[in-house]
Amino acid sequence: MAHKSIIIIGAGIGGLATGCYAQMNGYRTQILEMHATPGGVCTAWKRKGYTFDGCVHHLAGCTPESKVYRMWQELGAMPREVYYLEDLICVENLDGRRFTVYTDIDRLEQHMLELSPADAPAIREFIQAARRFARFSLMEMLLATPWDMLKLLPNVPLLGKWGKPTLEQYAGRFSDPFLRRAFPMIQYDFPDMPVLVALMFIAGCHTRYLGWPAGGALEFAQSIARRYGELGGQLHTRARVARVLVEPGPNGDRAVGVRLENGEERRADVAVSNADGRTTIFDMLDGRYTSEAIRAYYTTHAPDSQVMSLHVGLGVARDLTNEPHALVLWLPEPIEIAGETHDRLDLELYAFAPEMAPAGKTVIRAHFPARYDYWSDLRAQGDAYAVEKQRIAERVIECLDRRFPGLKQQVEVVDVSTPSTVERFVGSYRGFQAWGVPNQGFADALSGKGLSRTLPGLDNFYMVGQWAGGLGLPNVAAMGRKVVQAMCKRDGRRFATEIS
Image (cartoon, rainbow, N blue to C red; front, top):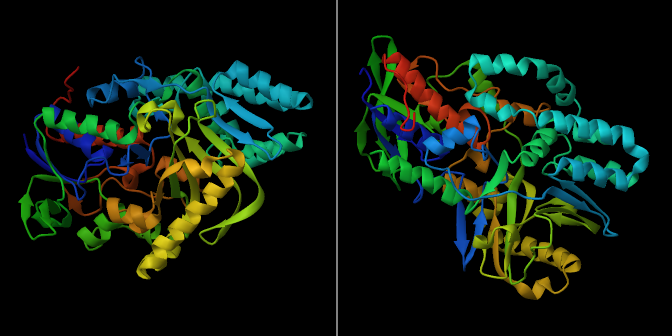
């Protein structure tokens, strides 16, 4: 075998997947993780018996007949208990009127027609599209064969039709004022999301392709880490990599190992980075191996603010099992959060997962967009950072107390995560996840446009994870699988898995 040893930087899902598949195929690997636990951004943390999940909203590949399920099975993450939720999200106005996006498509159609019979044509067109999307899953294309791609061809017009309009644009077709305002909020409250994405999620929940893994993100990541250990891989935590070691090779420069922050050097035939993209390319490698596209992505596309980057977590002594699992709650008057004005709260209620809180109690999380500079400046001021987090939590609790009277006295734990929190514990540049190109947004973030899995002029080096090819746990795990497939092809080996 030409390549026998591999060093992997970062124990996120991409790094763990790379390690697992490499071990399955006879490579000797070690993963160097800067944090105390594996998982990267696929993580959670406990506070006084409450678990605050930092990652999973919906997990793809929950049906045993799917290709993605097979991948999770290879990685030791399946089979496991999965929660299949009745609602994707619920939007509630000040009068208590609700638009609930039921995951049963027939029930959703009936509900929407009851909300606004006059909008039947637009409703039925949307529902018909959801039923068509239930016949296939785009997430399966991550592991598609050429034959699978051919079978997708008849659906290309469907993808084209629904990939163009945003939820905000489609909402303009409704005459009912409530439905017109609520519809753009049905997919994580991202109005500029293509309708295509909402249809994919509704269809995926309907077929149970999408679910929520019991135990949440950290247990999911730890199951893959255990699988990696069982396969003979070596996982080293609290081992921050400072440099990728490079030497001249027969075809230009090649990666030969890494240097840790403590000065220790570790050598290998191949290096794979699952770390933050900017840190990898411009710090660990001094920006020596780039292209115009790579430089443009990292220097001109960083957003000032990013969605879902400020989280207010509450542990409350209250059973909320009769409430939706996700709730967009309209407010009687706007509130100011971290320098920005909001007229609604985006909430997740984890009562559906009893293991996330003590018996009879519930975890609630509110999420907001946030600017890194705002929180970085506050953190530099010392106490001002903690004071602002507390102030924001109090504002959220006040709003929730109106909707859930008495909740203010039931709050037992408060946990606030900011972009600075993410930067500190995960190492993401400015605390952000991979971003899309401005004015193109979410579709680019999913597709990985502008990102790179190899670097020009550097041999024996690969990148995996969201900074190498877009968002989503199945996506980054599939990248790890494909990197090992590429290594096997290069080394003249047949790619194999333990359950083949």
